[in-house]
Image (cartoon, rainbow, N blue to C red; front, side):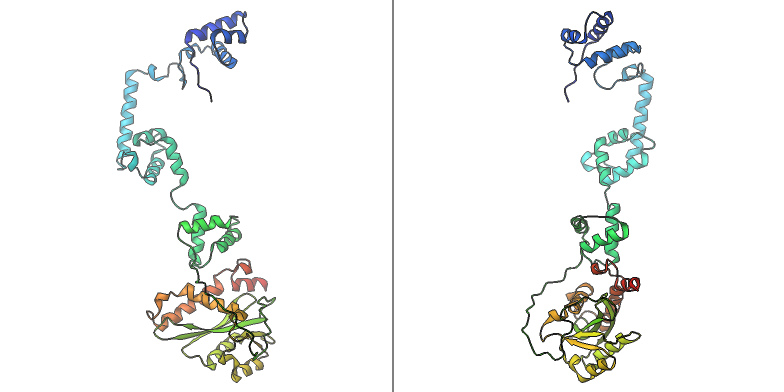
Length: 387
């Protein structure tokens, strides 16, 4: 934008006079008086026709109405304005906000402006504290605290106990609030408020070679299922957190990753896994269900195989020493340890607390935790909707 040019009052009136005489064109007047734009001449003519002759004497800048400029106010009016200004300043400074610009806390200043802006102009309030009006609006735009979107993300993470990553949060926002965001945006917000999920430590695994198959591997790493009670997986894991070593036996349905049954014991005997199997079969049609396990002694025992056969269950087993053949249940046991227990818990909690934590987590896993493969639904929700 070019610099504004100030034309003396005499020049403006002379141009209007010559223009009214009709002897000169706009271009000739511009050349004669050094006027840069013909619109300036049109403006002066408009003032003359409207009877606004006082405007010829006004300087560059804000144009006051005739008789209402600062120089037109009498001493009493100016004194009243000063008194009103100092009254306002005294009332505002009662809020004990430091007058030093560097000491003003943006959050507090915004609150004061919001409180008094219906009584005093925002511009005057800013002047009292030496804050530029533009600075106030910039501060207010930042909104100093979680935005509506950030609050939704924080709420989702709190409800799920900080156990899901930014991709799942992104999908839940899309499903529940119809909010579409890039996953990187969600990740930045989670990092900003330190609500990232707990990351499981990556452990290096080695694939063992082929070994003797005790029972055929009917699953063959096909962990997808088209209906409930088609493919089950089971395994045992250690719980070294309480006063003594405990063991957890679990059976999961691969259709929706639902935990069908689990048992906690201080012994790894055959009755331990049989108890879990009987719980899983209760109230379900298990005929020709494929039950996959590793080659642990409990699963290769005569009692377990007979119980499964009696119920019409087809048993399947991984290759010896190969955790990948039963990866889903192995991953679940790793997840429950990383999300529900801390390495610092070892030996510091009693076995009743361990059992209580497992019960709580199992309910959370089945009824509260959403899965991407289930279209952001929980296992129970997915099964009910499918039915």
